[in-house]
Image (cartoon, rainbow, N blue to C red):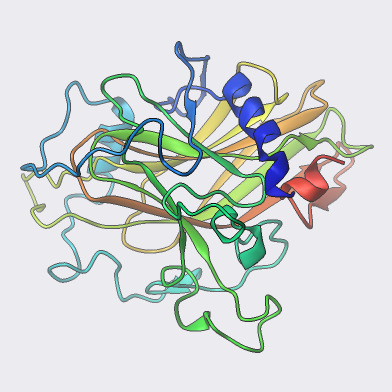
Length: 311
């Protein structure tokens, strides 16, 4: 979608975005609703990054406690190394392997708003996937960063002249140094004909920077940030179903399968949250959306940026 039309996406998000501290099941609308974050970053105005002793706001949610407990207090692989130098089925260290059936890989440079006359690279969005954040006193939208990431994700594949994306390889980063709850809202995506009443399965690849330098048995590693993936059956509805992701230091996959019921469209919410004054950096790439009919037929979207989604 042309960035001139991104306002339509922002309006849809403000009408339909939900709580950013969800249980893994569902959440209702917030009052006030999340803010659409548009650049340049004038409102809310940027504030200086705080220096702190990594103190967390209280009380912590169940999700934050689960995130902290997930890795059993494991420290960083080496001091200052927030991305483990390990090989998994999804990637090697910071490099994310290619994957089939991706409908949004954030790779086309022209899809980024900051390349099309928007000077604020810290308040970026990608072809209709518009950013939003809570700003309710405890969670601050002021310093949440949405930016194009060239190193984490593509790794040794960026600037690859033989890639199908013309050498462009990117992921998106959501980050903050103070408590934040933020995300990206997809454009309105119509349920394809023949798949009404079926299911939709959405998956993302995500990486949470491992900032734990003080964990271990009996110690609090302060791993309170996490990723989540929400799917709204009915883009204008007030219910979203969530799955949370707590893997840190390496690429992981988050999958959410939702019953469509009588919904004619969906909205996808890719979210990150930190209830603490931490150096929280969460990277997202390779979004897949598949519709599943009752007879077992599967349709993967080839493009879930706004250009196809609004048809």
